[in-house]
Image (cartoon, rainbow, N blue to C red; front, side):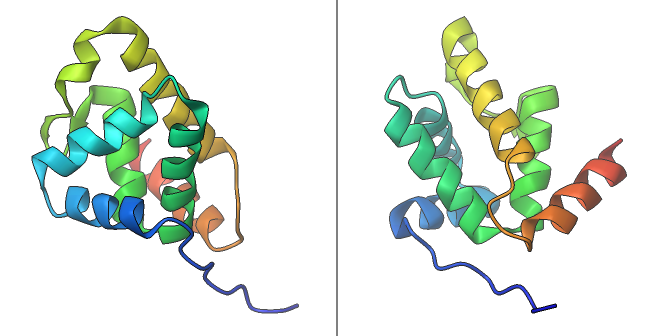
Amino acid sequence: MSTPTKKKIRHTYQAELLIQAMEGDTQAVNNLLIYLSSANPILCQIMQEAIHDLCETTIWRNLLSCFATHRWNNQLDCELRSELQASRMINQAIIEVFTQDENELEIPIKEAVLHKSL
C-alpha cells in the first residue's frame, strides 16, 4: 500500500484566506463565508477545494463549529448568517466538504474532529 501524499494547493489565494481565518482574521472569515454562500457554484467549489487541499485539523474544527453554532474561533461567524438563504448555502457547503473525501489524508483528520466534537 502506498503512502498518501499531500495534494498540491489548487487555489493559493483561497488557501491564504483560510490560513488567515484560522489565525483569527475576522475579514478573512467573512470572505471565506462569502465564497461558501455564493450563488455562483464555481466560487463555492473553489473554496471547498482549498479546504480539501489544505487538509488542516483547525479548518475542520472551525467548519464544524461554524455549522453547529455559527461561530468561528469563538466569534460569531459573519453577518451573512442573518440572511436565511446565505446561511443555508454555508451549511450545505460545509456538509459537502465533510461528506466528500478528495484525498486519503483528510479522512482520519475529519473523523478525529467529528469523534472528539461528538
